[in-house]
Amino acid sequence: MSYILVLIAGVSWGLIGIFTKAIDALGFTEMQMLFVKGVLATVLLFFITLFKDRSQLKLKKWTDIRYFIATGICSFTFFSWAYMKAINLTSLGVAAVLLYTAPTFVMLFSILLFHEKMTKTKGIVLLMTFFGCVLVTGMLEGGANFTWQGILMGLGSGISYALYSIFGIYAIKAGYGSLSISFFTFLLATIFMTIFCVEPTAVISQITEMGQWPLAISFALLTTVVPYLCYTKGLSGLPASQASVTATIEPVVAAILGIVVFHEGVTMMKLTGIVLVLSSVVVMNRQEK
Image (tube, rainbow, N blue to C red; front, side):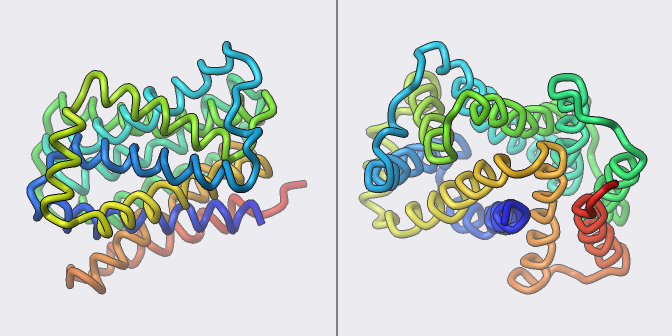
């Protein structure tokens, strides 16, 4: 069930491209999109948690807020911002490849912090995942504009993406459930963005005037609430490294949607990349003796 939950999270994250194209066309900035998603995710998670188990809306200790500062600000907010910046400074393919260095960072952090063992299987899986992502994004099939700032932003998105798995494990060990972790993650992210990043009133007024609340709610629910709940719940039954690699089904879903919905070209490299990523998930999920 943990594998299935993480796969659902990866598929849900793979839907981000469809919503992003629709919202970009309406004229919203990247940070406005991120703010709206954070606010709606916080509100939805508040009511879901209130209905299911209101005790999860409380911190066990005030010092535990450090876990959610890490998952909300250092991971969710910075990952999303750095990823979008990397896309603008390089290309979508290069940014996606750099983002999916995240399993490598998760595995390295897990070895250092959780004393997970580095095995031959994990090394093979890392190589399969990385080269699969390279092929899926089509990076090798066309020119790309490289800048040091873009590369650093892309690697930053990968590191901050990996931090959610790491600090999510710490929060789980501190006794928090998936609802608590997800709620406090987005609450801290929303507070941070409200203070430092956007003008909330202007954003809300713009959405209301354009009548785009159904799109905004769907965006928050399908690409944020559902995947983060599923992924965090999956972390409670999987090592962080396995969960991170399993979630790399996301670029495969994005590639398939690009082919089916946006009529992007199908090439042998892209198909080979899809097979590599899927195969890496299968290999990682094998029971090791």
